Length: 123
Image 1 (cartoon, rainbow, N blue to C red):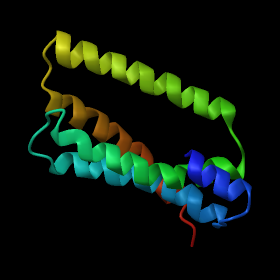
Image 2 (cartoon, rainbow, N blue to C red):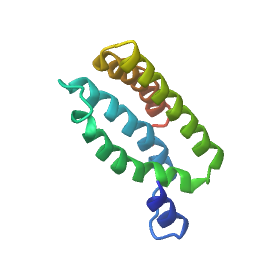
Image 3 (cartoon, helix red, strand yellow):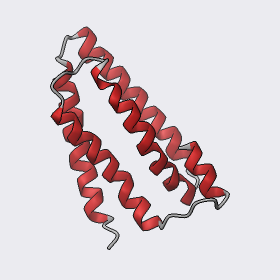
């Protein structure tokens, strides 16, 4: 987020906001779809998601540059913290298979992000 946010604020890069607002939910949709192609749901095999988060975070940073949204950032941190807590409780304590958890969250993310992509189609 921070790199593209800074580059955009200082006018080093410019991207049409319609495309940015479309690409943000598209990155979420892609990540959700990739989660359904996984065969192994160990912590080690999910590391590729960290690289996707890094790459897709650059796109998300462009969105924040359009209107710097501190409250949105804080809201995202709260949501991520709650999901991590739920993940820990469900996967580690109740022994819910990690694959089920990932697929459940991915289904929710897929539905929401696909809907947003359709609403924000830039063409």
